[in-house]
Image: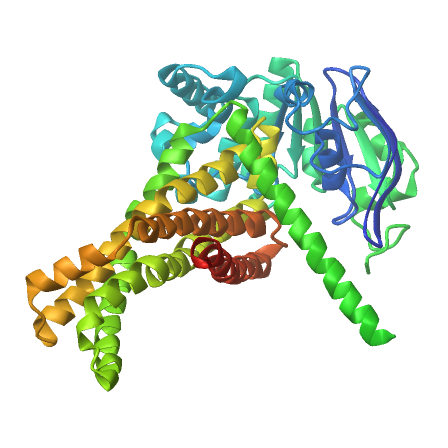
Length: 253
Length: 257
C-alpha cells in the first residue's frame, strides 16, 4: 500500500503540490489525471525519492520512505520493488535494447549471468510485442512506440511489485496508444502489481484505471473508483472528461 | 552599498560553487571504496578518453614542438644562443606546454563530450531512470570517467611530450641544420627526472579536473537543448580555467625552490 499524507512541494516561488493526500491499495491500479503542468510527474517523483517533498509523509507498506538517503541499503531495497516507465522512455542510448531491458540484471544486487539476463530481456521484449530482432538495435533506431514498449519491458524486467507509468501514451497514435494501454492492463493484472499511472489521456484512464484521482491546484480534488468517475459531480473531473474550456480548470495558465 | 552587495553576492556564489564542486568530487571519489564497481564503464571511458585522444594530442604537440624550435632559434640568435634549442624545447615541452596544451585539448574534446552526454541524459530523464534502476549516477557515470581521465592523462601527456620533442627535433635537424645525434644527446642529458615527474603529475591533475567538470556541469544541466548547450559551455570554460590555475599552483610547488 502506498500512502501520501499532506505532501507539499515548491520549486522556488513556483508552488506545485499544496497538500496531496492519497492512498493506493496493494494490487490496485490508480490513474492520476490533471492538466499539463499540475505536478503529476512531481508527485510520482516524490514517491520514488527523485524529488524531495518540502513537507508531508510518504509510506510504502507502512514504512516511511520520505527521507531515505540515496545509496543506503534501505533505499536500494525500496527501489528494487519499483519499476518505472518514463514519459520519454528514458532509454540509455549508449546501450543496445536488450541491455536496457536487462539493466538491473546485469549489475548490482540482482546480477545474473549475461546469457541468462539476455534470455530474460528477450522474453520481456516478446511480452510487450517486440521480436528478438530488436534486441541488438540501439534505442535511437526505434520508433517512438517501440521505444515505449522497450521502456515498458525494462520496467517489468524484474517483475516489480509496484509500477509507475508516466504519461504512457503521450505522443503515440491512437492505435499504438491502445496497444500500450492493453499491455499495461494485462501486465499489471498478470503480475498482480500495484500500478500508478499519470496521464491526461481519457482513453488511457478508461482502459487502465481501477481508481481515479484528480489533481488540480496542487491538491487531490476527487478520488474514487473509475466506474463512478462520470457521475461523481466534481466540476474539475467533469470538465476534464468533457474536455471543455468552461469550468474551474483555467485554460489560460 | 549596492556595489558592496553585488561583490558580496558574487563572492558568496563563488564560495557556494566551490563547495558544491568539492562535495561532488568527494562523493564521486568516495565510491572508489564502495562496491559495486562498473569495470565495463571504466574500460569504455579509458578507450574514449585515452585512445581516441591520441591523434589530437599528437597533432597538437608536434606542431607546438616545431614552432617552439623555430622561435627559440630565432630568439636565441639575438644573443648568439641558437645552440640551446634542444634543451629549451625539451624543458618547455615537458614542464609546461605538453601538460597544458594536452590538458586544454582534453578539456575541448573530453570535457565537452562528457558534459553534453550527461546533460542530455539528465534532460531526457535517463539519470532519473538510472536511480530508479538502483544505480547511483555518481558511481556509474562520474567515477569511471573521472578515474579513467586521471589514470590515462599521464600516458597521453607522456606521448605528447615525446612527440613535441620530436617536432622540435625534426625542425632542428631538417630546417635549422642541427646534428641529429647531438640534438638527441642534448635533449636527454638536459632533462631531469623532476621535469618528467612534474609533467605527469600535472597530467593526472588536469585529467581529473577535465572529467570532473564535464560530469559536474552535465549533472546540473538545465532543461532542453539550451540547458545542454549551457552545461557544455560552462564545463569547458571551467575545465580550461581550472587547468591553467592548477598549472600555476603545481609549477609553484614543483619549481619555486
